[in-house]
Image 1 (cartoon, rainbow over the protein chains, first blue to last red):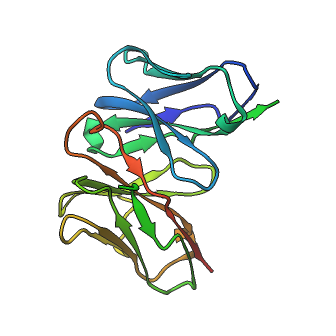
Image 2: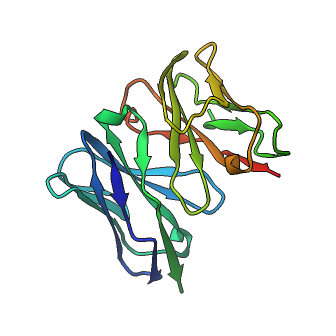
Length: 111
Length: 116
C-alpha cells in the first residue's frame, strides 16, 4: 500500500523561508509531485522529482531522497499570496498512473 | 487553450437523485483523470482514461459511479442514487502524451457536489 505524511499546518511571516516535509511509503515509486491549492480552487503544479536531489524553480525548490522516502518543498521570500495548502503526491507503479496525495499542509503567511 | 474546464461548478441535489458532471480537458491531452476531494483531505483518485479507454478504476468507484470518454475528448462522471457521503469536490485533470509537461496533471476548477 501507500502512505504519505505531511504536517497539517504551518505558519510563517512574510519574507521568511519555510520548509514543508513529506515522507512516503510506496511499493513502486515513480515520481513525487508538489501542488499548491488555494482555498476553493484547483491544485496547481509546482514541482516534480523522480531522481534524488534538489530541483529549483524561482522561489520554490523541491528535494527528494528516494532511499529515505523523504521530500521537502522549500519556499523562499514568502509572500502573503503563498498562503495555501501544499499537497505532496506520489506516483506508484503498483497503483497505475494516478497520483496518490497526502492530506496537504496548510501554510499561513502573516505580515 | 484556457485549461481544463468542468461543468457545472456547483451542484446541489437531493439524496437518491442522479447527477452528471462534464470535464473538457486541454486539447490534445490524451490522458484524463477524475479525483474526489473532501474538506481537509487531498484529492483521491477515482478513474483514468487514455484516449477513450478507461484503464484504471479505484475501489472508491462503487457501482453507483460510472465514467465515460466516448470520443477521447470530453468525459462525463455520473453518480446514481446519490448519498450524503457523495458530497465532495470532483476534480478532473488531464495530461499530454509527451513533451516536457507529460508528467504534470493539469487540474480543472472542480464541481462541488452537495447532497441534501
